[in-house]
Image (tube, rainbow, N blue to C red; front, side, top):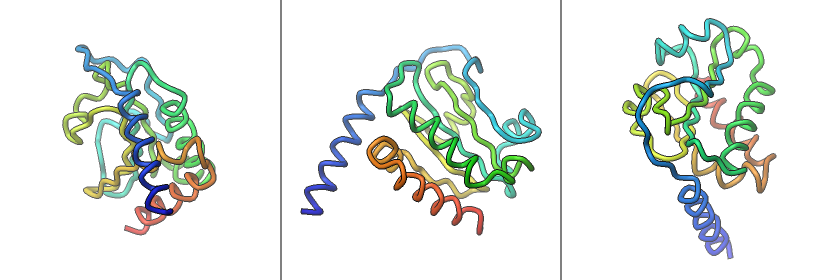
Length: 157
């Protein structure tokens, strides 16, 4: 039964990714940039330093409810769970429209395609995309606990 449930969740995840996929456009802009933390521009332009944690969400121009929830809810949970880290600039959240090639340097560095949620500290990169799309709307409390569990492990590094 658990195998069937996991299979169904995997199919749902891939359907969501395919339905939310995007095509690349040219031209770099930062119209939809959302950044939290101190020294905002410096933090995002000197990426990543070993002491800070970066959370990057890449999305397309056309966004479904789940895509928007991954962005907004993950940001909200991180702010609730780690307010001091945001305040002192040790945690930075960036949301980028990949269709507009926002932060093309990061898109190339992390080989981004489609919607992607990354937690990064130093050279450790944790792809949270699959779990985010699986739980953000179906089980928000589980998603929040996964965010905390993964982030606590990164903080310990």
